Length: 424
Ligand code: SF4
Image (cartoon, rainbow, N blue to C red; front, side, top):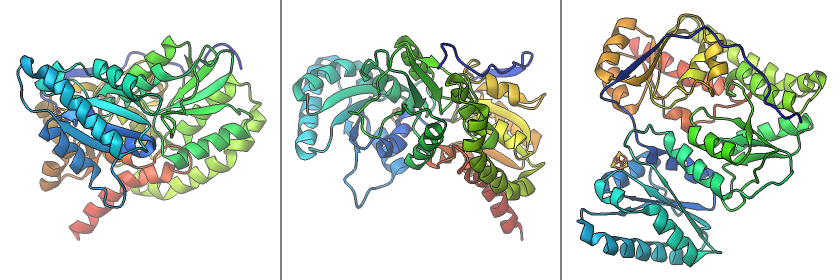
């Protein structure tokens, strides 16, 4: 393993980015609980919030009939400052009751929200207090999933950044860390590929068990699997880890370049790399052929929502021949997205932030075949004859890696087929 990051992609001359501020149409960071509670099997997410938060979580995650849920909301009613001490007592009582009933919980996340009563409460102090009380059986951590100035994937970022602080020191141990919640099956596929290249110490954040966190140190090299992990990356950098520069593992080309970044760092011979990745690359390419036929030349418009927009746009344009009209993203991290920006076709209109009314006007003008947006916009658009894809589905569906490349394409082809079927 060498000391520096690998794969330097050439940057294009400054791309024009339209920046607008105004009304936004996004979900809040609490939404991340929906996929994080499935991924981290020994964790429980207790939202400290209002009835609105409870409603959001319940409707987004659905009702779990056969399993005990691993999320809930402690509803905080309106109170003045004098009621804060009671509020802390109440929270402690709720946590006590929960942990007595659920001995399987090893990590409890107190998840902050945006109602003013919750903001008054110091959740990090509460987490410290409760951790002192319940360790070693249960660690209590906290992060914010608040809807103020966030977009829904920031909930995962905040959660993982909190976990980084808990990671043990790695000392001199070299390791590759893959960062971002991935479906277990995708994680296993990536582990096999890295192991096949001779990279044996591969760990994942979040781990399937929150109490079995990987170690981190100066010899940790990490690959981001998701483009929305700014805080997490900063926390890892602070712990001495080094990010490997790469695009994101979406599509055959994105996955190959992402794997190559680690292979270069570990000085894996090109012959070995080709032999290990070849079968997956072939399967991915073959799987994409039928979608090239369906999607080539179709126009797509991205509203800013998941922060996955730029890597997806790159995949859809370069591997499936779609035409990008506008690619909106809530935040554009130039460094993390450098390789993605460089791979976008010339002249794509990028936008950061949102003034939703103006953007809706631009969308109608662009006459896209498919619009990627949040639920709040999708229904009215569909009612007016536009074909949409809910961006949140890209977080619920495994889309990373070779074996999922065709599934990712299918997410965009399906609404077009449905619209066609309705037209007859
Ligand atoms: S955190 Fe804020 S935006 Fe999210 S559901 Fe609760 S009240 Fe609504």
